[in-house]
Length: 85
Image (tube, rainbow, N blue to C red):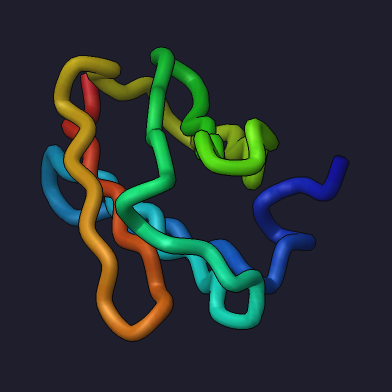
């Protein structure tokens, strides 16, 4: 599995106590309403409930609060925001 630095579809930005994960999924024909985003303290997991597939598993560079996950989509780029612990 590629690491974060090897995955051209994923960017991770840290700002203060927030961590943003930007994922470019254009060209995969996914609908944001069919995606489920889950997190644990060290990673983010994106599932497609329509096809019952795992889309992405992303290991994070810092520990996060898994209960702080927020998810949005803009022009095919998915934005996941988490609070660092």
